[in-house]
Length: 579
Image (cartoon, rainbow, N blue to C red; front, side):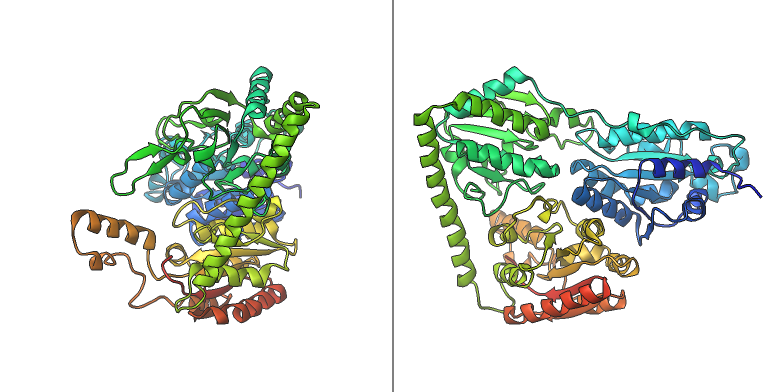
């Protein structure tokens, strides 16, 4: 008997054509047709990652895309599932991450709706719920429209600046038999366009300004979204001995490189600042009074600013994530993937055989190398200063984790533990870190997606896991156990939502109220969650709580041995001081 093809099979055909690697979902009846097609027609060739919440389904796809550069699909159930997933979609939008979100609706044909349930599972243009923070959305009205809708969504999603897209599949269209074959397009002819080069005259002018500057500085934030840019930026920085300040939305520059002066006062000393993919350029140029919310500029009078990126191509009419408008001397719309090599080429041509300038650059490199060494030495001294104590200091915890993983091929998933990991670990390769954490209720899901991207590589993915974040969705640990996603979760457990606790302390100081009451509504204590037991209950390894830094190393060794043997997550609950 010949197989009778259905509308949802066409969706699977398109997913195959675009080589979608995984599908994360929380089950829902409105896409039961697609679910059946994935399992049977698609033979689960794009493995389903069963998720405990729609937010987690989006976050896993978010982390996977950040770590691999490739999109996977996340499916959310009609109106209610879509609404559950809104925050995660918003974060993917903020983070410029391509996530292929697919949903469904009860039949738009009202004569085919089941009483009550199909009505509350249906909305007029379902994408309205998230339209302000996806790049594009569509809701095809017949099966023949599926290929074009899917192809356009993929291209829009993967065109820089990247971001999430949403496709809504009518339940009736999914479940109807096809009357004839629906052709699948040649996807090789529908791929995203080549990168935006940027105006060559403007890039040449930027090169002239860089070569002429006495104290140039590079600021970078999203440049490392392309692994090639990690090495390209090193070449540009070394060519002119320009110090780099990495704001870590992606890993943009090696942390142990002599020109990495993140955490220094180079902005105050700069006579020219080159901004590469910095979304909030105003922020690093000013000092903020956290009580009054007032800002003053840190830069020297007359400091020149060059901004290269495409922030204005990713501007929302709704979300004000476009940040404070900053005046610049030269603004170039370009993809740094191609603009940085071109800029370096122009700089090399301008330098030519100028021996005097090259000597100046060599001297500048030596000065910055000394500053880099002084910074790292000071951080090591701070670790020693805060070595003892229970609970342990955050710097001691980061040191102990580094000792346990430094001989592994490791990846840090999200949280940098107050940036101490960036100070103490050697981030020498682009894949070591897909970028810092982006908010509470995101990190365990994104970390699981990062671990999924590295599954099968032999790399040890480390998640420095805040306690407040894990409380939002501890069920994500079960996902890792169920689908055998190796992940080392080291708890950053201060038993508090301390970021907000600090804000309450500031308010108390400003208003003269009782600082000792700042903990109310902030603590994750009395009783403290037993995270090790939670992990064991989800099928993972669990150990802790550990208060003493001397005990961290042996516990991590046991956890890593479990991961290598079982291929499942392991959690070590370490309790730290607030900062």
